[in-house]
Image (cartoon, rainbow, N blue to C red):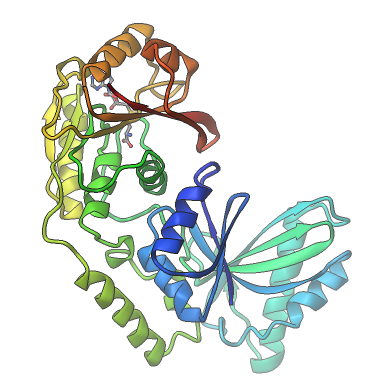
Length: 369
Ligand SMILES: C[S@@+](CC[C@H](N)C(=O)[O-])C[C@H]1O[C@@H](n2cnc3c(N)ncnc32)[C@H](O)[C@@H]1O
């Protein structure tokens, strides 16, 4: 089967590397995600293991759809019995570009009609639509009149790991935090510090990755676990995949520190760490009090910027002064404004464009001499 794992724009190389490390086959990075291939179980494994993937999709069909009727025909050729029966629910979302069909709602509707009509013809009743929590979530992409139909193996976006019960003012998605850790070159061995931690997302993802705690161990049921074809044998294989991931968990990891000037943020981070089942040191302190680690460690932080939590030039200057004192450390900053790079007053070793939702940011990496 052909799979496509989606990633935040700019983080595709992190997802590609992660897929390769987990020995997936046919790994090929593309815009917005990474292709891979294998038997169905590889899709299950991807949902359980991948930290940087936003969604894991499996391709069900690809066909020409220059008209509504052609679309209906193409969708009708898929055998829907493995996925849906009348007791299941579905949702279809659509996107289109450079095609004769231009209304995504119409495309989604025709796709849904073709599916439910097939099942009604076969068994006399049809599955219903549930846009909020469907058993089967489908995506129909139409590009230059060519339709590709995907099913979402995860069911929902994979960033919802289940440990973050509270969020601060401007939280990062867990999948983005995991990708930034990779892109900034953390080796999972050096001490780790996020001195402006908010809800602690980056530090918690660091702790989970360092101990090899797979994100899919605590997830509620994935989408594929609700499909009609997910029988006892498939459930057993999924349990085996989870058991194999669990067996790899390391009992300990390096020292991980999360700090924030806001006592509420520190409290939220402590609560989230308890939920995640990892031990990190949480401090309530200003970045001006940031001290070097021994041995020299890795800093990754996401300072305030933009509308949600405005930053100031004075804060960026304080931050730059504190970070520049960390001789021998690697420092990485997710910067949503050029003011941060100016305040650092040195050229970054690396500057990568990464999107935090719609906000274009730069991941700046410095090796402090
Ligand atoms: C954009 S948020 C971080 C969000 C975090 N990455 C998350 O996922 O929840 C920036 C954080 O910096 C903190 N902050 C602002 N000024 C600070 C300072 N001088 N020292 C330490 N933390 C500070 C804010 O309280 C806020 O929680």
